[in-house]
Image (cartoon, rainbow, N blue to C red):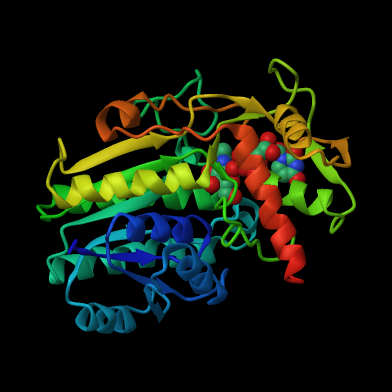
Length: 344
Ligand code: UD1
């Protein structure tokens, strides 16, 4: 029997896909989530894919007493993956305290509790947002961190610093910081996927909702960037590929295979794809047209950023392998499933 993993935010988008992969690899999981941006139907999806219903505790990770009870109830937790966080860049500008309170307190509670309960390690969900607009692409883990352009981005930087400071203070746990590029897509079964609350901020859910007719038109923010076709460039990574990297990271951490007490990995494909190339690929892959119009630039957008994932490829032995067309087809099938279920 493998060791138990606590997945915070485990009913969320990346969390739920990761729980599926952890269970497939034999890890017993307990999910903690306050359902602020998800629902318990996700547990049904996970169970339908895995044949296993993970333990689930509905608690807000900022509630220290409730979290302490959780650790007492599950004394076999040996590793943590911390997804629980607010993540909307625009909202964070309007409600910074919400972001600092939730994202920082969640992490600090976990760091205290993992020391009290001798948990071996934590995998932290970080983001390419820490690089801001890099001077050069692709970015490696050594690319300088830029001043954050939003409170959301700042919480990711501060959380990375908090973990580093706690480890440097002599704490005896391992930490792996995973910097995600742009996660997209859904499980190929269409049983779990991204379920945005309200109007999506992110490109792919907005695009699939427009393609199905739930939204009138997709605004493409800016066509006058200094890039090959004038559109912003991102590194879109399949959510199942991304989820699999967490299993490798957990294994490495629990089995003390790490090279240093804190390790950092970029998780991306290594390919920069423009917003228009993504729309074209979607239309070719699904045969569905996306109504769109060119709109002004969105403030705060980075012009172009993509990863050099060679550290994760070489050291974790992990590689993103799903072709973009397959990922976008999965996103579309998930959108069709939401429609079938009367959700969107
Ligand atoms: C940002 C953050 C990322 C974070 C994510 C969470 C940065 C650099 N990246 O990603 O770390 O995890 O938010 O939400 O801060 N677009 C349109 N029309 C739309 C929506 C998006 O044209 O309706 C364009 C954007 O202008 C951008 C690209 O699509 O060029 C990707 O946007 P989005 O999906 O929102 O992700 P990021 O802003 O890259």
